[in-house]
Length: 244
Ligand code: NAD
Image 1 (tube, protein in one colour):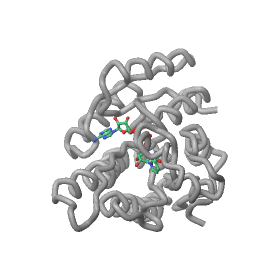
Image 2: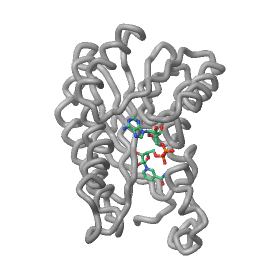
Image 3: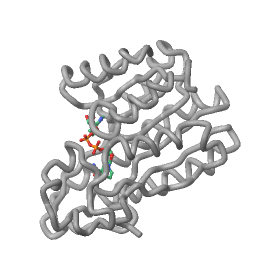
Image 4: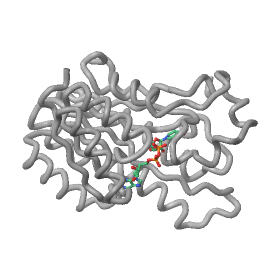
């Protein structure tokens, strides 16, 4: 059980992050949701989490802002007493072919998906080192493992998350900190709303369907909990077989 532990879930206001926040809360963890969603949407998520009997708070903040993340982590520790679990799920897409991709389209995706993940790990690390424990789960993508036409910015950011996960795991293992990543395939969320009606895409998936946010959250929960206590530096696909 995660009773009394605090989990910070970036991107916890929607899709995979929301499903993960609810699973961690159902097991007893207090939850901080970091998001860029409309305030009312996040407030509804917090209500759902609190109904499970734990403490919850939403913070609307851009994870790509290094110093804002630093301040936020300090505030969370002051209010919740610790951070035990960090889930880096905040992410965006700005798809386009390389020949037409604008500089800001590339930079924005790298800033949120890769630098944002680094910023969170960077500022949680002193907290984890002091406590001598901590668990990090990053959300990469099969796009970062095998590439995807139209996603040079996104797949680069998600491949970066793979390297970041492995370096973090090696660097912090002696401090009692584990760091792993999940690599989802096509998952039905707001991010993929316009893909879900694409029959050709679904046909490419060996399981012949998109995954659900819950199916990814189950894996994130496993990697965040003591059930995976001997696993670190691992990247696990949850993709219906699409990247076999
Ligand atoms: P989603 O759009 O439903 O949720 C994204 C969340 O990230 C939202 O809560 C949003 O507010 C938050 N966010 C966006 N930019 C932010 C920022 N700058 N700072 C803080 N929060 C920010 O998408 P999702 O499908 O649930 O995606 C979650 C993660 O899973 C992302 O990292 C995404 O790249 C990854 N992923 C998704 C799929 C898929 O098929 N849906 C596949 C592979 C990987």
